[in-house]
Image 1: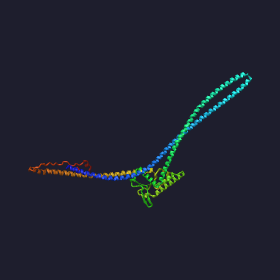
Image 2: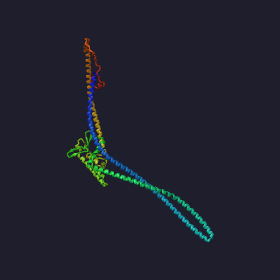
Image 3: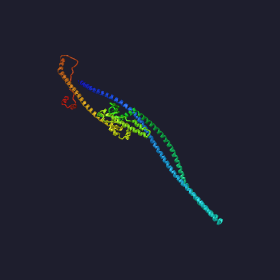
Image 4: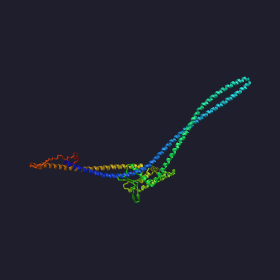
Length: 488
């Protein structure tokens, strides 16, 4: 009997668990379908991002290569300037040595002049001696002339030898130094030719890279000038900014939503949903073509005219946005519209030539935004959504806890009824056993006394002395004394 009661209780509990599992599987299937839809959308978004990232990576790589070649060119120019400086210093030293050599030659000329003077003095002396010899005897004249001529010749030879040694000592180091300088100059000239050859090759490679970069830039500008491509680029930039700010497109904002009005259809590029049910309208149809035309101008005058035209188009577009009064068509929107410019350079160029754009935009209820400022705005909205989700989750947890408590109370009530039924069944069983022992079995045993025999003996039926016991913890959780007494 006890086993049958336990089996019934197990079946009841199993059915309860099965019901809970089936309910959760239904919920999981719905979540799974939603996740598949979100995954498909995410795949499309990643595909667009990969295309944009590939273009950005190509441009970034070309820019890095240009910067690297410019750095190498700067280093080569520095090396060339150092070589030029060394060559200038060597030429200066050569001029100084040449000056010293000229001084030595001039000193040599002075020595030669001195020798000529000495020769002249010797000739004058010889003439004087000759005149004196006319007065004396020929022997005295020859003797005196010989002695004087020998003495003068010896002095002259000594002075000439000393001057020659001095000249050789001065000229020889200069000759060696000139040879070394000449060798260094030839080496510098060879190195210069080699450096200029390498520099020319680097310049040619850099020119090729610059031409390819210019070609890629022109291609990019040409593609961006197409209305569909520029619109897709603006939408992609909006989506990327929104994702960086943590604003997922499937829950916080909508793209390319159109509204029919009396004057036509308004087509904002994005509507940002605020947590309190409000909306912010974003327009990204900025005049990118005019700015690109200004950048690609051939002269400064044309570039200034292009920038002026671009600023005029920005102001005209801002005035048009203010006149559309998006807040009349979107009742939940505050009285403002965001004009999104896809880059900081677009905003700085317009503001530099028209400083009153921000003030005039505020008067027309148009807010100019760049990727940086728009990310900050969406970050604030995302934080509001996070707080909203926290509040909503807390409310859901509260409701779920209340529902779980009520369901738990119902389950406890079912278990209580089952316990009551089990106690009644055990009582009825014990009453039957006692009635069997006291009333039926004594009469049946009299058959054996009357001679009725059988191979089987009548066994003894025992009473069940175990009954379901209530949980003291569950009993303490109920505040009602009647419920506690009923469980106990």
